[in-house]
Length: 175
Ligand code: HEM
Image (cartoon, rainbow, N blue to C red):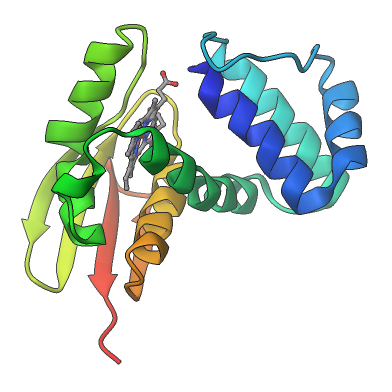
């Protein structure tokens, strides 16, 4: 997994829980906790860090991953060079799979990205299938909510983890 996912995770934990929690998390995970943006690290390491953080903070793993996803969107969008191509959360969510991630893959051939298939798209709703070997549907949910916050749109995201493949529904809230 790309180093940026790790460096930003440490940043997120420090912001949300404070530096002491970062220390305890790294200590309890048994890892060195040293990451660089340009590096690439085993997926198991982020799992070990999130598990240690969940034990330390009492917040569930899935809540932590979702809330990290919200945070991560702001960073990803700031490093994505063609952000002005998109003008809404719906627009960006429908183009992650066919524009954004393929460009990421060109820049970083070692990136291991999920795929999203659009099953249904109306002006009010997008239904996607999430296909990945990582089970990071909560991260996807958080990233989509982050996109909603970025464009100041009121959207709801629901994960159907009992489906195969897992489905994610994004809805506009009219209110
Ligand atoms: C709403 C928008 C987005 C969604 C839903 C999304 C979804 C995801 C998910 C779920 C993962 C984790 C890997 C997996 O599940 O297998 C991921 C990884 C990643 N995404 Fe996105 N993404 C979004 C936008 C972006 C943007 C704007 C960038 C621009 C740079 C980006 C770059 C990456 C990178 C670098 C990784 C890490 C790949 C790796 O560790 O090998 N994503 N994305």
